[in-house]
Structure formats: C-alpha cells, structure tokens
Image (tube, rainbow, N blue to C red; front, top):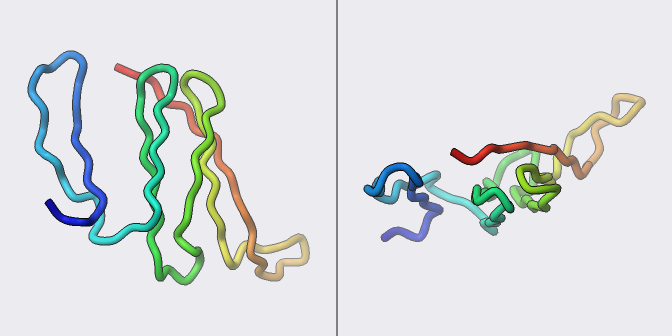
Length: 96
C-alpha cells in the first residue's frame, strides 16, 4: 500500500467493503475525528500551495457537527490588504 492518504468506504447496511482508494497523491498531517453519531471525518492538507500552509485541524462541536480550521495567506483584511488568517468552518454530517 502506498504512503499517500487513502480511504475505505464502509456501510452499516452492506456487509461488503470497497477497496482502499488513494485520495490525493500527496498530503500532510492527516487528522481523524470520530463524531458521537459514528461518522469519521478525515482532513489533510495539501502542501506547496500558494495560498495556504496545507495544515488543518478538526474539533467536535456536538454529536453530528465539527469545526475545521485552516489558514489562508492572502485573506483580505478590512482595508482589502492580504493577510495571513486562520479560518474556521462549522460542518454538520449525518450518519446513514
């Protein structure tokens, strides 16, 4: 098996499992978070991008939601000038 991030899809309803698939040919610092509803979330960065360092972080925010944090090097400040900024986004996911 390769060294790049991979995933398996599994279903509670199906007994068979799809084979592992490569997600991306590169990635940094993969983060896994299992929510109380049983859903597992994966986040990983893409290094060598011009707008970000490629690193992420995950934090649970209830049984079916989480925050992802990431940086952006050119996010405009109130005056419109690009600044390095840490951003977060709240996401909600439901299990099958």
